Amino acid sequence: MEKNGYLDMELLRFTTAGNVDDGKSTLIGRLLYDSKSIFEDQMEAVELASRSRGNEEINLALLTDGLRSEREQGITIDVAYRYFATPRRKFIIADTPGHIQYTRNMVTGASTAHLALILIDARNGVQEQTVRHSFIASLLGIAHVAVCINKMDLVEYKQDIFEKIKNDYLNISTEFRPQNIHFIPISAKLGDNVVEKSTNMLWYEGTTLMELLETIPVPRSDDYAGMRFPVQHIIRPISDNFHDFRGYAGMVSGGVLHKGENIIALPGGHRTSITAITLADKELEKAYEGKSIAVQLAHDIDVGRGNMLVSAEHEMPQISQTVLLNICWFNQTPMSVGNRYTIRHTTNETQGIVKSIDFRINISTMQKETDITKLEMNDIAEITLKTASPLVFDPYKKNRTTGSLIFIDPNTFETVGAGMII
Figure 1 (tube, rainbow, N blue to C red):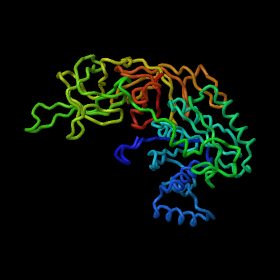
Figure 2: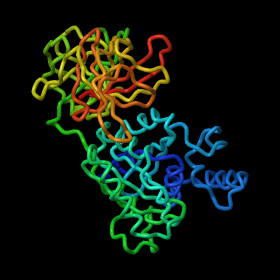
Figure 3: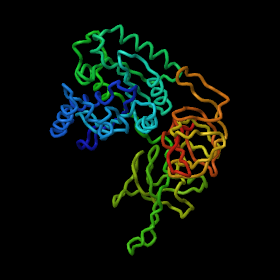
Figure 4: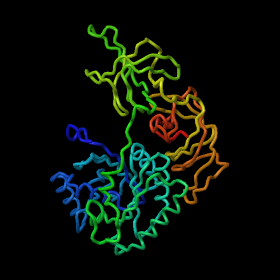
């Protein structure tokens, strides 16, 4: 897909997840190191930090554990984003925490990922956090999951251990198995099957992790997907050169927006067409998903922040004040039926009340627990939400932007939960 060099290369976003000490940060460090994506001064800093910690070898995890508190504790707390490229593709990695109290950070890191990389320590097998993170990845609609069974060097590279963990994972994931799942035996510390093929596991005939990352398909917008353009800002410059200019700025959040396209402004339902698409001082004929632009309309209709422009010729989104959604609760203060929150959905903000908690997922058993009246931190559940004003949305599985929303505590202004619309 390379057209004009690095900037036009295809981009893959992926996230790491798994239990504490399964080796996520070390694996990312190995990917960066073996793909020669580390500057010399970065490597020198890591070598110095490794020696100061008393490590006999270079601790590649220090390449991603960037916060001082992370380095001191030897754990990942925040989401660490790293960027690198090979001749075939660009990558953005979200290295997320394994500790249960930082599950909300894992959700943040995985929300835009095309692939979830789940690590399992070969000595310990599938753990509760493995299940939790895998289930969250499925809720977030991540189509590809790479299950990397790490630290194979510590179990003598035995195939039967790899096969047992693989089968255990398949057995526990029957309820939320992703569309595409890949199992790779690796040693992040030594580099087996990360970038280079391992000579210690000749029984494994699959791809290395890097080969998988370079070849899995990256979803793209197309002209037949539902065009979605949440309006963020109205542009009315006070200038002699732009007396009558009125632009609507925002990011294309689905499909492709075309100049001349007939559109509907929701929730009002006013119809008009796109007369111009601009990016800074450049005019465009079309704009793809993820592009931040401004549009001009043929008619002076009532459109403001929080409204959504959609194609009049493709499938319409839903409009409702009652929303059914899966939720991951982030806050130590429980969510209870009847609680009121500020709801942020695309560029729209409104008030909402929890009408019911339909069921909670027991991560240990994957059973649905009913008769629940409140959610504790890190609980995953299905709830019914009633909002003060209508939301314009798609199911999360169709559009991850218009199908998601966040809960904000109106008193502390903290983000306390994230929901995926069913």
